[in-house]
Length: 152
Image 1: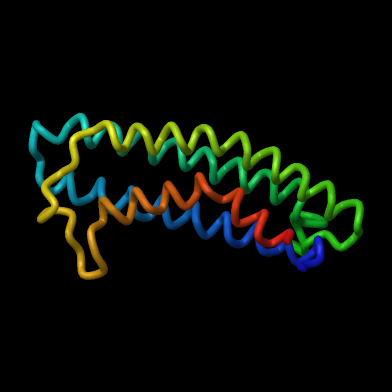
Image 2 (image 1 turned 180 degrees about the vertical axis):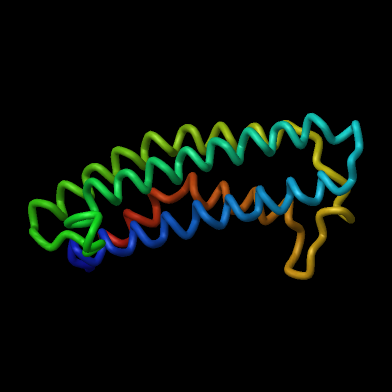
């Protein structure tokens, strides 16, 4: 079983990693579709831009949480060490994450509603960028199970 301080450190780093990964994949998809300059892809492009804007907002909210609850001060950028501050940071993180969860489900649903670009277009050396983006958003929506596993 992890200590509350370890849990706090891990959830912060993992959540930031997952948000950044989703942002990267969305940005890459946008770039691929922009290179096609096809009128058929305008709805897809607009939806991807919207998703990117929403993830940017989630990243900003996470950054605000870190500055207010995770760090002792924004100058030192040291994680809080006091037990009460750690528990407060975890409680605020869980509240923020649960608010994000519904928004992330909505973004994943939105991604699944638009017409998927030609798989030949989204294929990259590591796999299919469209599938990777879906996975990244799904991985974010299921972050609660990561937190539960840490606590057990």
